[in-house]
Amino acid sequence: MGGAITMAESKQNKRKSSGAEHLDKLREILFGSEHRRQEKRANTLERRLAKDSDALRGDLEKRVKALEQQTETRLQQVHAMILEEREARRRSDVALGKRITTLSRAVDKKLTPLRQRLQQGQVTLRDEMLAETAAWGEELKEELEALRAAVLERSTLASLVGELAQKLGPTTPR
Image 1 (cartoon, helix red, strand yellow):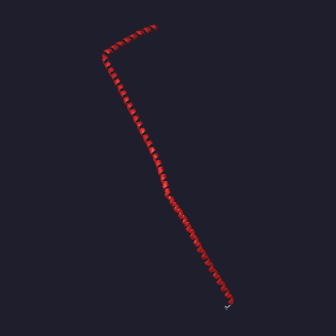
Image 2 (tube, helix red, strand yellow):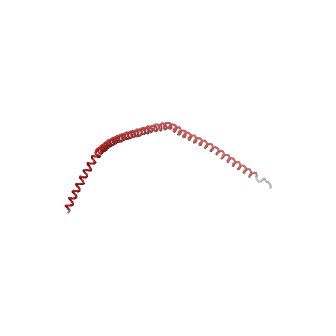
Image 3 (cartoon, helix red, strand yellow):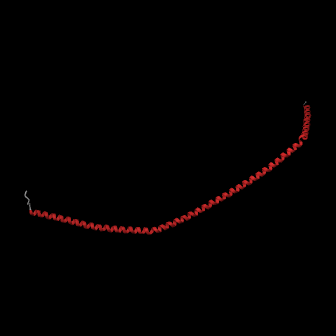
């Protein structure tokens, strides 16, 4: 029985395929020219889309490349400007350091005579103060000796009055 089914299936398949062929032929007759025209149109559109897509891709790649080049160029310019500015600041710092050194030396040069005059003035003032102090010391010694002499004179006078009073004796009645 297995062989009979296979043959029956085979006949049925042949009928189906011959029916399909007839259907394909009928479609070709009725719609063939329209189908070919639509297929041709679809192929044309597909080629046109592929061509436009390639053109857009190429244009986009060119623009990206141009943008990358512009960015790289600008970055190089900015880097060069930074290097120039850094060098200018370094030179300015060196010049400023030299100027500060020069001004410092000029100030020291002008201050040196003033310092010397100040030291000389201090020495002179100290000498004058010592001389004045010595003079006051001498005056004080003289005044002290005069006071001692006066005190001695008073004590001598007091002794003399005391001696006179003893010699005169008690003369006061009470």
